[in-house]
Length: 312
Image (cartoon, rainbow, N blue to C red; front, side, top):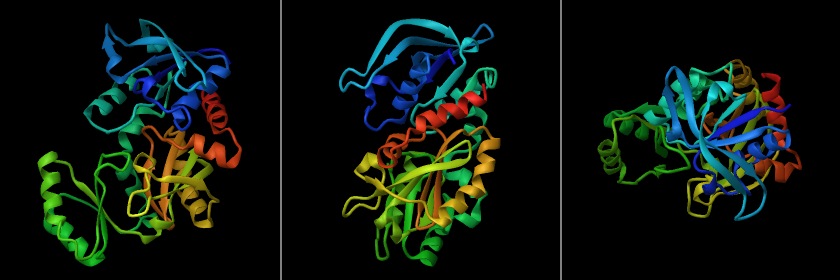
C-alpha cells in the first residue's frame, strides 16, 4: 500500500537505531512503499482552517551514524497524509496535550496512531486506575499527611511524579528512611501535580516486565532487570533487557484491558507488570519493539503496520 506517513517525533538524529521503536516503525513503513515525512512537535500548527507541519521528507536506513537523510523543509497539510505516527517522548505536559487537540482535527480521516483523543484521556499512571483489581496498593495525592498514612500502612513505598517518564524522579522510600518529608517538599516546589505512591514490590529485583499489545492483543514482552543497588528497571537508567515468557496472570491482565485499548484506538501499547501487578499503561510513545524482536525472532513492526493498514 503506497501513501504518505508523517512521524511526529523528537529529532531523528537523537534516536538509537538498535533500540528505538520509532526507527523500526519508520523503516517498516518505508519498506511498504510509504513516503516518509519527519517533523518535531513544535513544527505543528493550525492555520487557515488547516492543521499543517513544517516537515522534511525522510529516508531511513540501518547504518550507525548515518541512519537518515532529510530533505528541504516544506509545509505539509496533514489532511493529505495517510498516517501520522505521534511518537514524541513525554513529559505529558500542556505542549503534549495541545498537540493531541490539533491532531484531533484531522483524525480519523488522517489516521493518527495512537488516537489523539484517547492518548489525552489515558495518561500512563492514571489510565490504569480503571482496573483496580490489577494493581498493587496505589495512592494519587498531594496531601502530605495522607501520604504519610499510606506509608505507615504499607511500610515500604515508591514515590514518583504522575507525569514523568523513563524512571526520572522515582524514589524508593524504605522503612526507616527519613527523607519522605523533604522529598514531598521538593516535589511541591516543582509543580502543583499530585504524586503517585505505590507499595514497593520486591519482585522488581527479578525484573519489571514490558508487554507489547497491538490492537489490544499481547504479542510479546521483555523482562527489564534493574542494576545492582537500583530500584528502577527502566532502560534509560541502566536496566538490562532479557528474554521472558508471559505468565497466566499476565495474560489475564491483557485480556482485562485489551478490548478497551482496541475500542479506544490505542493500537500500540506497552504495559509494565511487576510481580503480577499492573504498574503502568504506556500509550504516548511506547517502546520495546526491537527488544522483543531480538529475543523472540519476530518482526513486531510488521504486525503493527498490518493493524494500522486494517484501519485505513
